[in-house]
Image 1 (cartoon, rainbow, N blue to C red):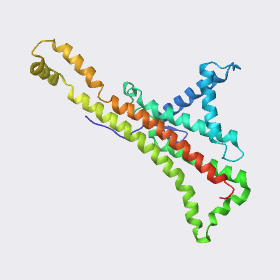
Image 2 (image 1 turned 180 degrees about the vertical axis):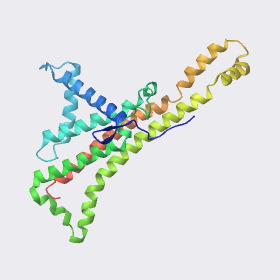
Image 3 (image 1 turned 135 degrees about the horizontal axis):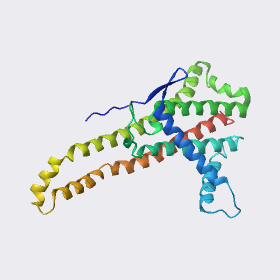
Image 4 (image 1 turned 90 degrees about the vertical axis):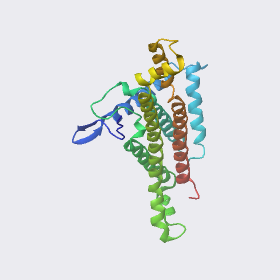
Length: 261
């Protein structure tokens, strides 16, 4: 069995090569978030129903996270909430049975297993927290590049630009590694559960007590459960990676807007 890692469905749009599989799953996630937001915000009630209450609690959590992040509380809360929801849903969408959809090239997977997506998120975070630093402190924001001594300037600038790099690589590597692991386990199940192996199992252990077709179907069902522990673990990783990305973004904004920075 052959595994093709990192292949994408590439199309040329306006002279640019675009990973169309990533683009489709990314817009699927964004559309789903937009749909949930519209449902939650339409027909708001003073006494919220369960759905409205869940979203109000989510908003409250992110507003609470932004109390020490300068004067742009609303913008910061919106950014952090959007990042978290997009990343966690983007991570989790890769657990759907996309292999049922056969593409000529590449396959559908989590948009966050594409370094282009995670790099774009990280660059946006870089631009945003530099903007918030300037918005909070004016041009004096750039003074920290020359501290504690002038010769540290290149290193301080490099620190700003390596932050998004670590965000992008960490998220990309963790999600891609999890999907590869699930793919390998699925391939292992496919290779082990052959008609010959099932027939041998019947002869050696059941001694003809059950029809071979029954045993084969039971074996297929039990074998299909093999990747489940890894898939549940990947759901945990999806949450942790979204949380880490969001918290580090909040930390970078706090550092950029701090008065003593």
